[in-house]
Length: 446
Image 1 (cartoon, helix red, strand yellow):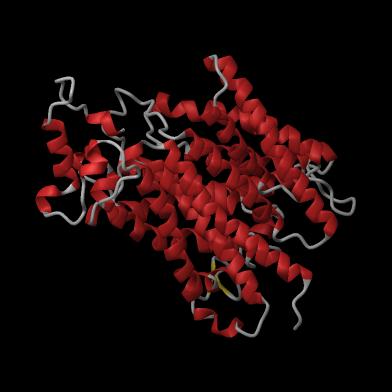
Image 2 (cartoon, rainbow, N blue to C red):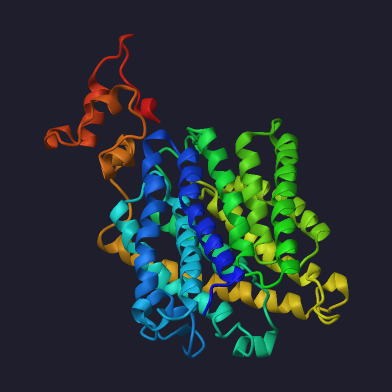
């Protein structure tokens, strides 16, 4: 079969979506403290490494083909993708892998500053297998919530073009559960407002995410008209969300911030994900305004409830994911004059279908994450020691520092003996008097 324009576009889109994961690493790395920046970037990179292998071996097989009770596909049907080597479906397999990669990487932001890298590396393949693959199969691969599925027969056909439920709600729910299992960072109750250490990283990461999202939403477009609608909606929803987030910040806190602008963009991108091909540009602008303002409020709730969702994964991805998915019940365009959301006279059927998808996603992701997270926490432990957290997970987990300047970063050598371990280096730095005669503060490298 000759390669077509659609095949080329799908490969380009896959590359764009893959770029989103290191972009997410920069976004998260800038949002955390300097002593955890590399760890956050590494959690995104290792997600790409692990999921890339898992997807070829059994992940893709679990999301397509004949399934088990409509919940997941046969893991051995295309094991190693051997059966696809002479098929253009191999391109689709590669494209779908990038979705799985970014989905699990999103979760890492909720446990910044305090998670063992090995525990995270174990969590990634388990979560992809137990949570992501079944969800992707049920909604996109011919399962319970696909056309002809058992859930669809009862509640109606869910719309989730690019992953409002599969990607955003599932990762946001997992982030909530995992943050509760791992617990708060030391000092969170006294100073919950841990400040981002590198705003340019955040802005660069957000820009990469916005760029990659055009492939994320648009890769599956089948016509030029559909592609155009997706492109415009992926532009205007985050634009409107950024504006409404900044206005909300100004009203609530007195200042519009760079972090707020970047977060508003991401909230808008999340909100438009499920509906990018199914709503009008004007509705997309309205959706962005709602998502930006709502998520700006959502992220502040974690302080009220004592939830240490370090990098606002729950407030942005779960919050905007719910808004975008449920909004289709109101603003989905009719297809061939039939159906549509409540505002188009389509009745409540679409809202019922969207609600059913949300409930199933919350239950599957919440339960699956709880079982996996608790099992890891009870065995190898998910959290680093207090000493390692104080020293910084970059030094404790990777024997590296994001920045070479400063006393700790310049003096630490990973080739030194155990007496020069990251924690020992931090302790030694704390005992050395500074030039002013005062002791080095714990947060001098924060």
